[in-house]
Length: 84
Image 1: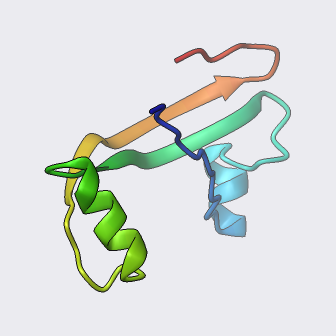
Image 2 (image 1 turned 180 degrees about the horizontal axis):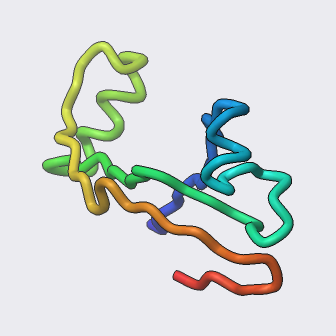
């Protein structure tokens, strides 16, 4: 069984912050900015736990959350590459 993950970016910048801090998505030198991002996984005690959650539409919780990354911030400049 493979592990899948979803990456999503949400940008919350006020107009005043955009021009004073250079954090604007349209800023010419920045291509990507991420602040306080994280990644969490659901850990199941057995493969049956995943099936039970699916069959009960999430009403029977069988997992415990595992936060692999918390509070990660980074910026990628235009023309640069970020690799994980």
